[in-house]
Length: 347
Ligand code: DAH
Image (cartoon, rainbow, N blue to C red; front, top):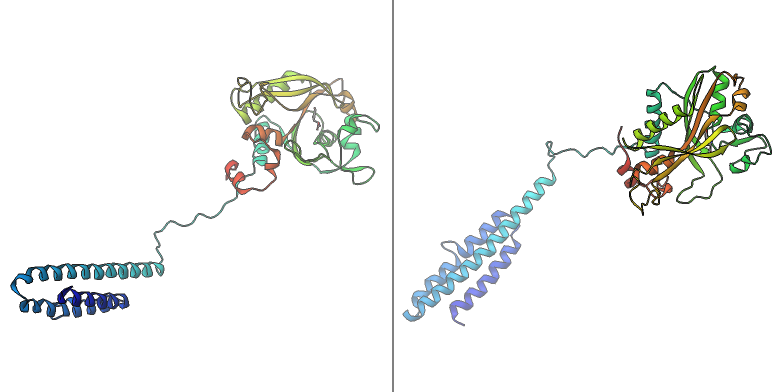
């Protein structure tokens, strides 16, 4: 290596150390002046070229130019690094008042609440009143008054939480039929949403605490056609404009005749043989309904020859499973914020 090259190499090392140590723009500039300035160390080396043999001078000149370029790069890089550091530090201490604010975390309306609210709003638009009642009921309201006397096998169907010999957590909202009719003369037009309890093992289709929506219409000349019309309207409100409703013969002690109510599957509309919602049948069961049994009307003091009525009881979770295409009822009670935010609305 030539003398020029070796002294440049040593110089570049010292410059690199000085640059590394420079903690601000001034210190960096001082290092630059010392090594690359007009009276700096590189200039001294450049002058020494004059003492070389003429043939060696161009090579030495190029070596110096290359070394200077490399040293300038080192300086530039450090300068950029220091500038970025300064910007970052300045930003860290600055409040940008034009920056969009973090949106506050808002709750959403639970899907069960939405279904109940929408169903009640639909009935209210048709002149029904929304009534609420106790979740702890005497067996009289739960069973006896609904034409289910002690010893009636239908009592077994309601696997209830008993509090003592006569009090229980209501297993259905039907007691509200009796409470309403006892307090008011016909005509009656109510919906009664609320919590119910049954000793069911929890799985994808059952909860021991769930919700029902009860409906009751009593007046002169009420018939099954009114029921079908109202329930078809309800399904179209909740699930879509093309829903149909069908009745299948069934049995409940408090209605005669009684029916299971199905609606067309809103997911496949009856066209998918392997539909996850309806199993390919094209129909989905929503709950029970029927014409109020004359014994029930007589129990509350109504003239069963003069007035008649219909009633229905639907599971709110059932309606929500169908409406939101959810496959497991437990998702409604897991409190998973992602699930709730996805299905929820603010208002
Ligand atoms: N209470 C019934 C149950 O929980 C559902 C029901 C069926 C309610 C028929 C009614 C009705 O009002 O008319 O299984």
